Image (cartoon, rainbow, N blue to C red):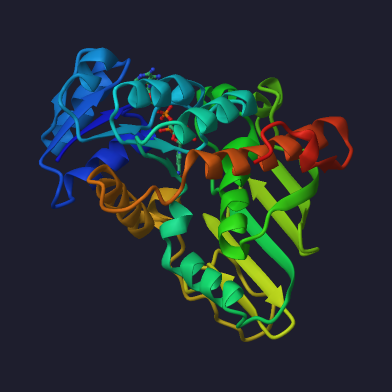
Length: 335
Ligand SMILES: NC(=O)c1ccc[n+]([C@@H]2O[C@H](COP(=O)([O-])OP(=O)(O)OC[C@H]3O[C@@H](n4cnc5c(N)ncnc54)[C@H](O)[C@@H]3O)[C@@H](O)[C@H]2O)c1
């Protein structure tokens, strides 16, 4: 198969390497608005460079992968759909909810599949947790705790186009919360703080945030995110039920030191980046996209799923900014 990829930055160059390693991918064509970035990524994987997005989309592709900055996702998904090419787009769907709603409607009106990149859906731990929750192994669920604690901030230039911490980072927790529980969020209360570098405040963002979410069956979820976790890259989800509790991320790499005397757990080594933590999940995810592009499976994470996570992130962002609880019914794009 021939795959085209737009945006060869942090995650794009990484995805290009993963795609190049898949048996069914024969050739890769890359494009970036910074030609040197595309050239470097292409050289690293034995791919070719397209001179423009139009040339990329016209190069007889079987699949189109979008790994550009968030603010460009909407126009590129539209371009992929217009060209009739099965499209993978990194999370989030778009920079704002209105565009996500428009894209969800557009995707629903076409047979061209779109796969949104929430890689936790392909992580073995989250899948085991989902089976336990939805199979009743934990009894009835009363609470969930989810954390995405990055070890260090992305470059300052990334922040103004990221959408903010809830839309950029916690959106992973919002998607996987729906995936694991099979429930929808009905209301949220979000807060945030910035004790780190000034570029967060200057970009209208925070470096640390937390939210309490109520699900449609009354389950409570507590979600936290930070850009400054000196202990390492710490991504976890704990689900607590009447018959048991189970955690994703509670393994030897757990980015914690126990305060209890004599406890040696966890032995390490820790993870220091999302790429390291989720390498196997990204590989399975892009393998699944190749299956989507070949028509073997439907999209495992649709634009409608991306919209659902975006609406929760929007509600949390409004809650933080306006210092009040927000009902999901206030956010446009109800299914
Ligand atoms: N799923 C995950 O775990 C994960 C992790 C990191 C980033 N992301 C998402 O991936 C996207 C990219 O993030 P990043 O950290 O790689 O950003 P980045 O800034 O490092 O890279 C973006 C690249 O896109 C290029 N670009 C911008 N506009 C373009 C356009 N119109 N056409 C072609 N190229 C264009 C830029 O020149 C840059 O090279 C973001 O939407 C982010 O949310 C997802």
